[in-house]
Length: 267
Image 1 (tube, rainbow, N blue to C red):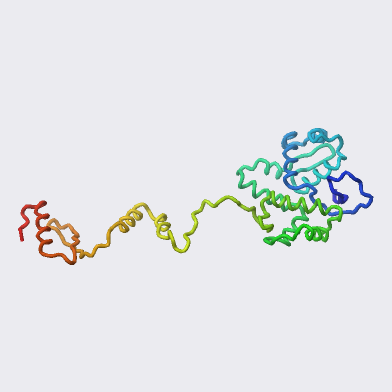
Image 2 (cartoon, rainbow, N blue to C red):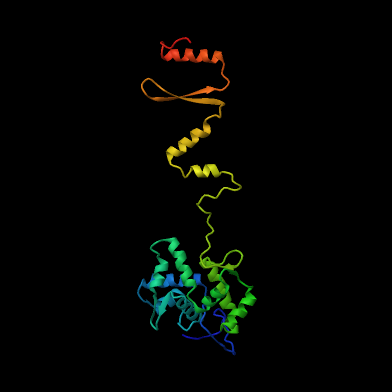
């Protein structure tokens, strides 16, 4: 239906004064998804008979207000198609029940469903990345967009509950474009105040580079002189000698060399 009577869907009293209202979800997104799941359980991807749906809901007639507003809300979210004889999950509705790519895809699909109602699109466009006003002020905004007075409580409550369920309303009541991820990040945190910067840099090196870095860090900073020599075989060798060595040190070195080669002269 293009227009619905503006009454609280959970209020059993018939009001004498009736207002016309633009279409809006009277039930929130979570309730509509539960309804969609029930419909899918009955008929799968095919049409579920109205009688079977009513029986599952413990309702005797399709004129029941809860049934009428629930099916209307699920239809506005784009989850179902309804007829006089049955209710059929939309292709999108089936996809969100069983997302092929798992939970990450489901979160994105929830965002798309949340944006489906035209009244929600206007609110999102107006308050994107902005803290929402309090519910009383929000009711005035909904009223300016064509929601009748008697429907404001139900419309605003359903919107706020749907935004929370879709994950686009953070703890500060800010309306976001993408779902809020409350899980801790698996990415390493950047070092604070420069601490740990060297260690984090080493993680990006190859194993050989890392080993060399560790060796450089472990090597003591000695007060030495480095000498490069070429051996009789033509190979290069490096010798580290203390800057302050004395004659006794030279004699000790000669004795050490003679262990490897007895032909080394005493002097």
